[in-house]
Image (cartoon, rainbow, N blue to C red; front, side, top):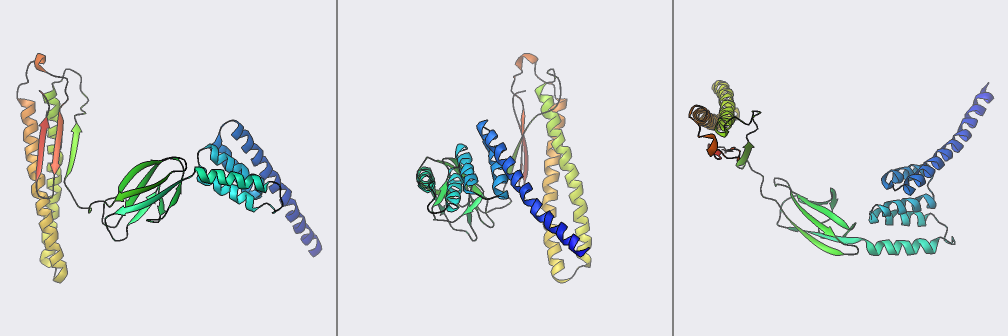
Amino acid sequence: MIFSLCAAGSLAIFDARPVAAQSADEAFVEGRKLMDAGKFREACAKFFESYEAAKTAGKAFNLSVCEERQGHLVKALFWMRDGQSRLPAEDDRQPGATKRSSELESRIGHVTPTLEGEAEGAELLLDGEVVKIGASTQADPGSHVMTVRASGRVDTQTTFSVGEGEAKTVTVKIGPVATAETKTVVVQAPVPVDDSMPAQHVAGFVVGGIGLASLIGFATTAGLVAKTHSDFEEATGQERIDLSNQGENLKIAEGVLLGVGAAAATTGLILLLVPTGSKDDASDEKPAVQAFITPTAGYVGVSGRF
């Protein structure tokens, strides 16, 4: 019985190899068909599947051709060199592989990224991949994006292009310090009404909606202020200081929301109640509402012709 079990296990091992080889060959044949049909991305996936099952020079060379057809010269060079490294020194394909590697290398662009400004922990990314600052990096011909990231700074990006065989230095500026800066929101009145509704009324609905939302935010913030005050009375030490600072910030937000809400609601009501001009005076220009909100102030404005 023991002998039978061992024999069965050995047979299973030797049977698995032809199956894997057959699967690799099938994937390779599919890859050739896809490449002949111009479906290079799908073809590369099949060639790689075949290569992973059985790494050979021929499969690496096909991957190189497939990547080159897509303009991926850096990958094409990698696979050409990989295939050449798998050939015996005396193989008659060696000279051709060396020539193809030289041709591909001469067409690849080179980018040297530099940084303008200083920031702790700054890093540069070329098309999403981290690169070394000041070091030449291979790049395919075409458009690219260089991004600089730094702790506490806003990410900045620079778009550029590289030609075949071109060497280029790309300088990227470190972004400004990330803060709660003033934000501007422009709302194009998207009220689903028919063409007969006056633009003034459209603006009234939009501004009134902003006012209502701000007043709801004010009510919510007022509740948080009350809770913070209650917790402050029971707290001691550092916790009491933190709650005091939190309460001050909430009061500022509470005042801004109340001011914006009241102003917007009043403006919206006026726009709805005041008689509109004649239809002949109306213009096709749609009203726009601008809301400016900062930590200490708020403003709501309406622009357009009514």
